[in-house]
Amino acid sequence: MKDVARRAGVDVSTVSLAINNDPRIREETRERILLAAKELGYQRNHLARGLRSGKSFTIGAVVGYTTDFWNEVLAGAQAVLAEREYHLLLDYAPDATRREEIQIEALRAKRVDGLLIAPSDQDPPTEYYRALVEEKIPFVFVDRFVPGMNTDYVAADNFSAARAATRHLAVRLGHRRIAYLYAPHRMNSAQRERREGYESVMRELSLKPLPWEVVRAREHSRQEGLEAMRELLNDRAGDGVTAVLASSDSMAMGALRALYDGGWKVPTEMALMAFGGAEAGEYLHPPLTTMTLPMRAIGEQAAALLLSRIDGDVTTPPRHVLLPTELTIRASCGATKFAPRPE
Image (cartoon, rainbow, N blue to C red; front, top):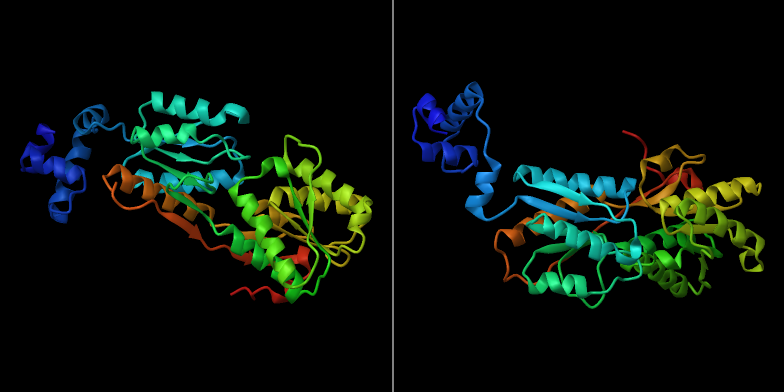
């Protein structure tokens, strides 16, 4: 740093401020310092930076499995963290029964400054999280939350999304027998809100809800959607059903395969919708209508909220951020005429 200061004609403290993007440094001076640093091959000593600040500049991500959804969420978080020179550390533990315990302990051993946590399904025990609160380790729940814990979280507005999807099928398209396809063993706050939103609209319209459960848990929700759809089609409860709202894009993909195998025409004989916004849905036949979730924005806002807590915002009450979703109309629901024209 002394060499850079001599090359740029400034003192060492000015170099330090410039490299840390301090707004008090004029842009002309900053550019001269950065050019000198580049010419000399200067690289910051992140270990020394951590020792001075008492931070590791690392954020832990507690996610049980990787999907297109989580790839997008984590990409959004990483973009925000990178601006502050924080690194995102993902610890993967597929064993759902001890996922939180394994991952949180592993990441704490790495001395992370904070955690982005996606609670596992079926509402895991709260003692893992209460210990973090007691030890003043900042964390933000992502995509879902744990009932009974008043902590920071950022998620999509799943209840409103389910209401919009159900109204699209029932009010705009006129369906009266609409089934809701879901997996009770994958139930979390996001999934509960989707089912509740669906049922609330059905009751308001004096229609009978038909929540159809996945009977057997499978490794992939696509397989669960396929089997559940087959069971619905072969059960008397499914008589007269003309539309299906699946709890996720992947479950809808399995349902679409079951309909195809059974000789059903989508959407003329059965309309199909889901939640997610995975890119693969656009390339199905027919393309999948979905409530697109703000995946990147969830990650971005969760990371920004976590950084504010790490920076010392400890007096502001816990923030509950719900982000809007968007109805993406494609052919699978039979309403392509309502889709916006391409610009």
